[in-house]
Length: 449
Ligand SMILES: *Cc1c(COP(=O)(O)O)cnc(C)c1O
Image (cartoon, rainbow, N blue to C red; front, side, top):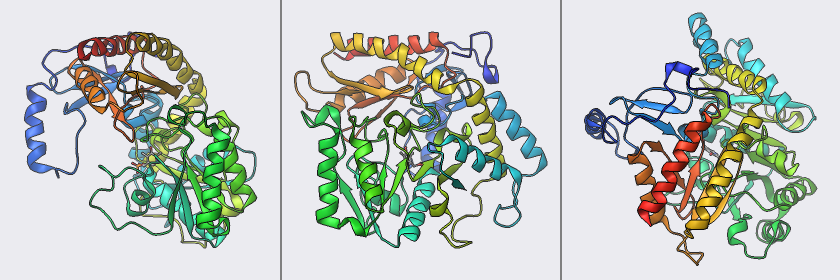
């Protein structure tokens, strides 16, 4: 891994250091102000207020140095304060901050689109369009697919997550907290079976795909379907890696029926899984691909990239937005992409996997609550069950999370059943920190047994 204790981004010492309880007194005072000022609907996983971050460490207002196993939900893949991102942003911000690309364009937007067209799977001719958030990219991918096909239905998967706007809430599977009380949702969204190897028993990827495509044919009618939208590794659903054969069967079905196959790589893309894009593990070339999160080192940017004939089927003015492809965010993306290319970021993600997997497997030997260990690269999760059963154990996940937080490791839970513990470290995390975080997790299993 690239960062050593001596060399840190943003001058952050690369060691775990707790000088108060977590959260400390200053964070608690800020949390009280947050409660008075911020909508209660905006929840917080771990209420430590951050003042600085870099490498694999978050520093809070009480000067605690915490190990970051979340990367702001898979966003700071290149690390906080990555020098190339900082240099690009600083230069751009000193030149101009906004013109609106749809009014008077600038080169950075075009450069990001060129990079996306070059890096995404497939050597067909491509075009891209830039937006601000993942949900907005998904909304636009659906717009493009509907416009191109002249069809309306959108097929999504069980356990899928696509965002919090009205359309993307409807496309998301999980009710609480994402959809509860927020309906009605957009029409013409259909959910079909996803491959979930841990819970599918003997049924392999091709068989589950068969259930899904039969459902599409019988209940929707393949000719009515504009798009099938799939996360190649499901994120909020619980880091579910589909069984071999599932993605390729779904993609082939889409192609055979004139359906646009959309890979939502918002969480799994940009080197997170040990490939530039997770669908490459399955050799699948999507028609459209949505990206966000890891694309711009923490600046808000998202994109839809895909086949030129699909992307160009939309009338001029049909896509866009005031801020989409903001020049500062584009400069950040160009810095992040350059760093990923120069540092072979997919290999760094595989190094994370090589450290984590054996440690987690050793923990599973001693702790039968670990029902499954899965994921790819630096996108790894464990699913917790009541020992000897398939019954989810979200209470254990919550207890482990609490232990890790109070011992200075920023961890996240996820999953349809809330029983998945997920790891998304930045690729700039030094190995000794990764190991230290895993040791605390190991202690957490002992302490919560
Ligand atoms: C986070 C996420 C989204 C939504 O992105 P936002 O930027 O939060 O709108 C969509 N799809 C997937 C797979 C995600 O992980």
